[in-house]
Length: 249
Image (cartoon, rainbow, N blue to C red; front, side, top):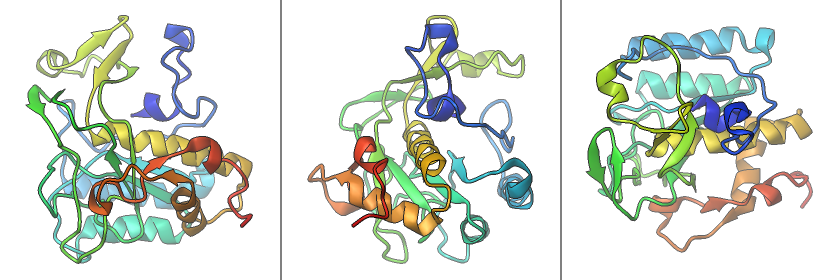
């Protein structure tokens, strides 16, 4: 996810570069080597981001995590919205539980967060060793909020392969290694950091923008794919349009 958002593609001569390769990265670990975690660790991670936002100039956060939607009282939703309220643009994956209704995972159900679905889930892809189709989470939420907000490519995405010895052989066996230093994976977890990277580019040009203004700019620059709103939100991001002065009407 870090590579999708901000990788410089050095080991591929720039071919597998991320969206915002000059952005600074702050990694907050809340999952184990198998990609599992619990809400307590995620909440602690979000709180750390809030507490350290000024120290590290944290303007946007990507959360490629999700759990069952229990509504606005969900502690994860409340934590994400607390981060949003202090000026951090929270970008969250829609989850891979589609195509049934109300399959958006929390905290992507937040009214405030920018929830990202996959634009290209029409064909079968390998997700965690399982063939899945039409997997991207669909709205509405349990509180009748249209979600996702926007979609981005999420299938067959190539990004950095960690060299950490903590990566289990069992998990590595489920991945498709590309050019030795990269891996190909699918899911809304891969779509979400594309939007986070685009937000980082926008904020580097217009640092005074608020999270609400960023969200409005996404809405204005999305291309309608003519899917239902609860599959595509506003549509797929047109990043060139997005990076124009979004405050000009």
